[in-house]
Amino acid sequence: MRRLTTAYVLGIVVLLVALFWTLPTVNAAPEGAGTSTSKQACDCSTYNALLSAHSTASRLGDRVWYDENRNGLQDTGEPGLPAVTVELYTNDACSGTPVATTATNEDGAYTFTDLNPGTYSIKFVPRPGYAISPQNQGDDTRDSDADPSTGCTGGIILAFGQQDTRWDAGMFGIARVGGFVWADIDGDGTQDPDETRGIYGVPVHVTGVDELGRTTDVTRTTGTDGLYLVEYLAPGTYTVTAPANYEGFARTSPSPLTTTLGPDRIEDLSLNFGYIAPTAIQLTSFDILATATHVNLEWSVRVEEGDPPLFRIWRSADGENWGLLTGWRRAQYVHGSTAYYTYVDNTITPGGLYVYQLEGEGGVHLGPWEVRVPEADDDGSTVANKRLYIPILFR
Ligand SMILES: [Ca+2]
Ligand SMILES: [Ca+2]
Ligand SMILES: [Ca+2]
Ligand SMILES: [Ca+2]
Image (tube, rainbow, N blue to C red; front, side, top):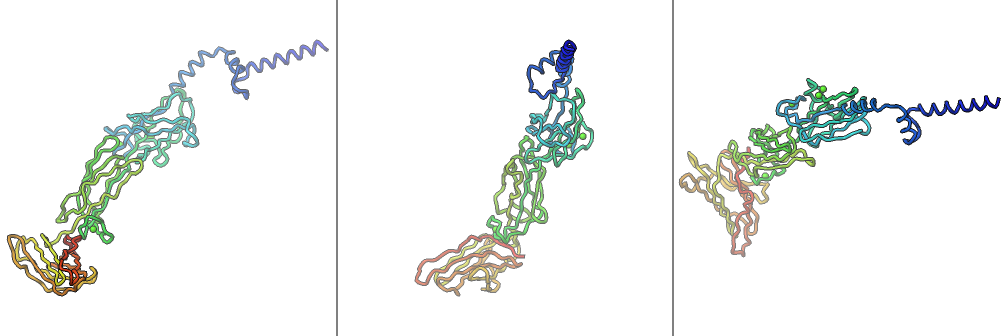
């Protein structure tokens, strides 16, 4: 009985030892001597070397490119897009935390190596100012595989030893430049609250160099609303030039205008230009002099052909309520192609404020000009405030 018991116990111990010896490395115990002992127990070196060689050969890739024509295909001349973040996930929906993250090189290439077989997904993260091209538009070696809204490829089954380089993403610029070409009624170069009318058909020239080194050189004409827009630009520096004159309109605000678009600002739609409306009458000079007893107005206009135009004069005390001061008046004299006019207003009150406006034939209004008449005991004279010294056309 005793011998039997001893043999029985010995047998259990041998069994337990044998069982422990053959336990796989999936062990609740931390990595340690037991695990390494079990590995050394079998001669797996050849097998491991083989496995290792095949594992490192498994990879995913391989390119993010600038899809200039936004067709979702890599066309000749479309360059690689550098510094785009690419994330690798071990699920089919780019969910959770990526297991690896890389960035495209200067050729737009990326790769994830040393991958085990399994399910993956790849997420492309566009830089500010870029969007992702349409997905799966053709030949898988040339097409874009990322969902435009999420940047995710969806599930990829990577086989043992597979080199899968079909995973590309096209991106295009979504930076924009644009603006408003407005009728600058008072010609001061500033868009005032009442100056909301756009000018149609003005050719606006947009040039620039984007951050990829690509150049832009396009001309847009303003729409009936006076707006122009250039879309699908990559971030960069752009210059907009508006002509000095267009169909008789004369530009009143500065040109060219330059803007730089980048991560902080991917569009600039404030590149505006003002133009003063054409007038049938071109004023060449205007002078106004006020004394305590009268206001003297002198002006001249260019006469291209025919008779010099007639004028009548409007006057206001506040610039809003106007009264007709004169009937139609002829030019005093004509010299060369210039006609000269004068008028003396004797109906003023010393110390008063007066605003004058000329009305030419055809409904052209020029002015207004504002002047303050000196007090009666003031020997001096004042000249007009000429802040609105540009013809305006009311239609
Ligand atoms: Ca393309
Ligand atoms: Ca595809
Ligand atoms: Ca592809
Ligand atoms: Ca203005």
